[in-house]
Length: 190
Image (cartoon, rainbow, N blue to C red; front, side):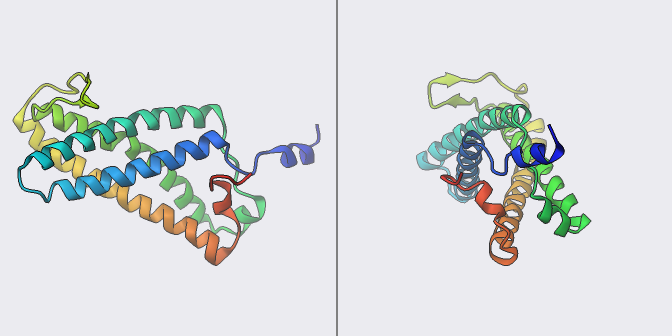
């Protein structure tokens, strides 16, 4: 097989499964971050307790989706950036592109695991969807809970900032660079 054939047969868009995982995870992340910001502003009430449970359920779902997404990514190499786009991007943008994706993946795992650890350390079990009790991630410890709580909070803020950066970069590519990069991940695009 010639190198021209190999290049032309390389995928230019993400698979339908990759797109589905991307958008479902995006919606879950936005929901969990928004819910987290809202619920902490409430005074102690049944509503606040219910929202904390929903937040935990979203966190568990995000963790599971992240495992599936990472597994899919290892088994199905994502399409490379188009050659013209790679050539046009300065070195710092290549670093930012790869660094942002690595940091996003790291935080997809870190934020929910820190939340689970905080909940366990604080003595509040997670019962997924009110039916499936999860084991404690760490032993109950008020001191440890106080150490973990800000780590969960600040890692969630970092994740939110990276999501905003990721969206801004995608929009820049779509509306300023007009290079079609966003189309590779839009649902329904082939």
